[in-house]
Amino acid sequence: MHDITGLILAGGRGSRMGGVDKGLQSFRGMPLALHTLMRLQLQVGEVMINANRNLAAYESFGVPVWPDALPDFAGPLAGFLTGLERCETPWLATVPCDTPLFPLDLVPRLQQAALEADAEIAMASAPEDGQLRPQPVFCLLRRELLDSLVRFTHGGGRKIDAWTAQQRTVHVAFDQPGDDARAFFNANTLGELRELEQP
Image 1: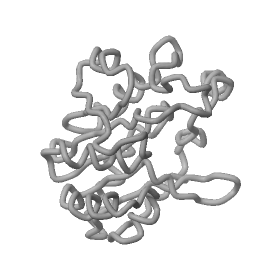
Image 2: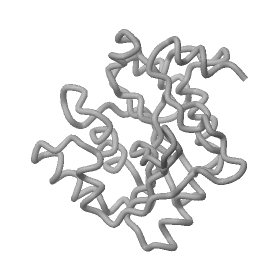
Image 3: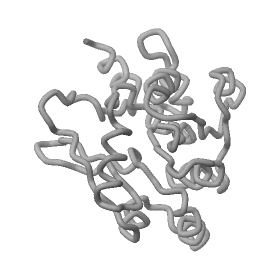
Image 4: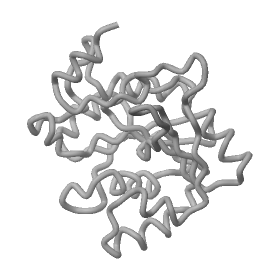
């Protein structure tokens, strides 16, 4: 655990949620990003948050908060870049702020797969529409990937899958008995968030 820093991605525009700051929306009585933080803290040594708005609200959660290193809400890779620049451990685990039910054993399973495959990235895959689909914002990254990501983003690259395809990546399936079918469901609208609150 102490070799891994966790990064919560809360830097988006929230455009599909009407422009609100998604991580600060209430879920079961607490901000979404705080749920995410409490789940992630159980699995890593330290946690930081990548956010571009309402920084004081995120700082009130008691962990470091860093805005994107790239301008104009450049997407999740901008968060990856910020996290790798600030990471002081061998590994960085990334999770989005809008998926509050992600597995409590997410990081250990990603780490085990990365070590077994000698991979630079371990990425979660989960059932979606009857097939396993990659969940590219749920990643475990080696810190040494920073230089590669700097080159990719400074060359104008913004798509996660285009960058991860250049690295040694192992996909980890979260479709085992006991895995929650809703674990990777992300709430893009306030209606979906209310739906996710149902037991």
